[in-house]
Amino acid sequence: MKMYKNFNKTDIEALSEKQRELKYNINASYLQDENGDDWYDLQKTFQPDTFKVMFDEKNTVVSIARDASTLFPLNCNIVELDSLPEGAENNGEWIFDGHQVVRGTYTEAERTRQAAREKEKWMDRASKAIGPLADAVELGIATEQEVQALKNWKAYRVALHRLDPKAGEITWPEVPRG
Image (cartoon, rainbow, N blue to C red; front, side):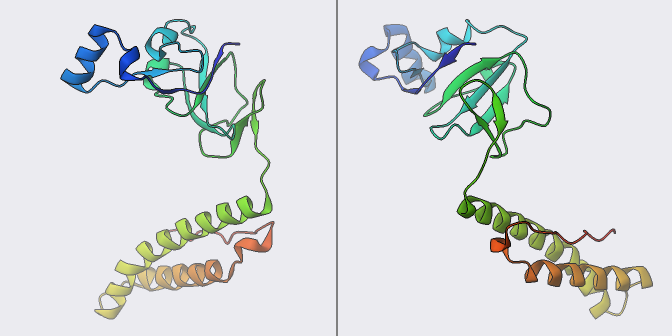
């Protein structure tokens, strides 16, 4: 398992003449890890068939790629792993525990923030669905299906509104169809 930590921008004085030229001509950026090793050079040390996992100072997985050149680990770390658990992704729910990627455990405050974001996402989706349906009803041109869909979406939005993100284990209402 290869791991490179604490990537920061390379000081201009540490760049080679060619790197400085690229920096000025095409605005190239250069990173180095805590040992002063260049990110572009380190990319060549990875195997092509492994997972490169980028994680932040809290060990939260920020990005996952097989191709290291697609990553830019500014203020992050990179570890190379042969495999990942099923479902692992860079959605803020996974961490690198020093050996492998695992589902993170969260404080009550973090769970509340996640639930509030989820609630807001679904409230936005409901409002977007309600808008054109309400317009059709208001204009008197709604079909029976649209009238029923509007009632379903409004009931869903009310159920969402009543959810308390601080409640811990939340039973989310079922999303209306159509």
